[in-house]
Image (cartoon, rainbow, N blue to C red; front, side, top):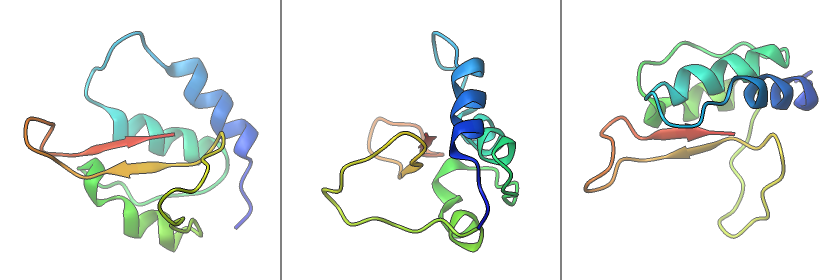
Length: 88
């Protein structure tokens, strides 16, 4: 996978808002694509895992230290958004 972490980080930082507008999956996908990797367009954040893995991303073990450019997929939970959450 050829991916510019710096381009993706720049994209997501320059488009971050001060509050949620419930488009986390779209904006995270667009940032990843700004770095040069194409992802499938998936409607819900909770379902991006396979697309990320097909693009060359890999799951890290629980407790790992995250670094700038890492992507997290958060599954739905009681009281949370049923679509889950995706963030970089």
